[in-house]
Length: 172
Length: 163
Image 1: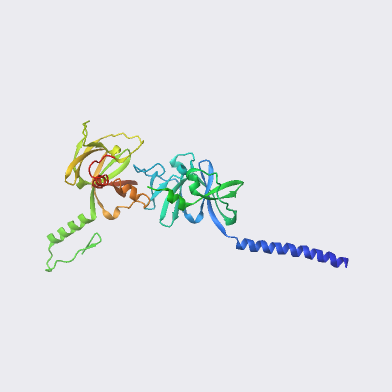
Image 2: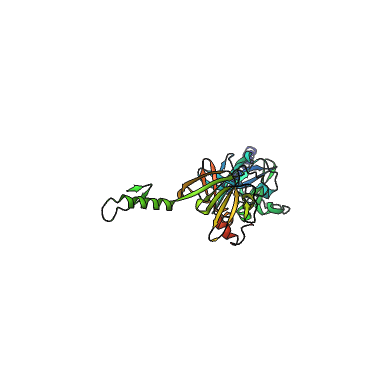
């Protein structure tokens, strides 16, 4: 009886462990994940949804165009296609570094497409959508208009920026 | 007969009317090309329709109410601008009195095909059109901004070209 009881106890523990494992698998399968492109801009890390970023271009020459506002530094030639460039640091109130050292993230959402100047790429990762929390109410200025959420990455809180909101900010 | 991708009909009477064909070719070419005056100001290249320019003359320090510096006209802002070889372009202004713009570093007057002209990204086009800049011509690794002085004049109300 004792042996049976001990066996049953171990069985119970095993069953419990297996049940937990199965439920975890179910959770893993069901939880929606989103790809994000994490980048550095000025002093902080930010992210875009991966679906909004077509490609990252290496440092390239930006042709300045007179009479454009400061946040539109000019044009780039992407394999024969002329694209605009947005200096997102203007909206994020980040320190501006040399244009020549920047990368260009090609952002595309619907009819909107433009290069976005960033300092460097940190990572491209899939994160559970549930880990994205609403943006802090304390955000101010244009940054508040751009941020759609926040998530933890490498012990740091990353602001998730929305390309659609960026497009809306570029009002000429 | 195919010339530069365009198809020309054979003469109706069946004769090889070379003069007529040549004339048609010239007309077709004229329709598909633009004669541009290329210049640069502070490292930015511009192209204007040579037909809009009535006269080019050297700038010799003259002043006048109808004489404008190009960089002031185009909104260069705080960008440092130095003219190395300034010249006065007298712009035809559609029947109204012509006005004069001081440009710099004239590069070329050359013919360009319409098909080589690129549109501005949709994000910028409405804004730049209001300032007379209507297209881009990639050339030798540079972007030549195509400027229509007549459009600029009209966008600003047609009376005073200054901002």
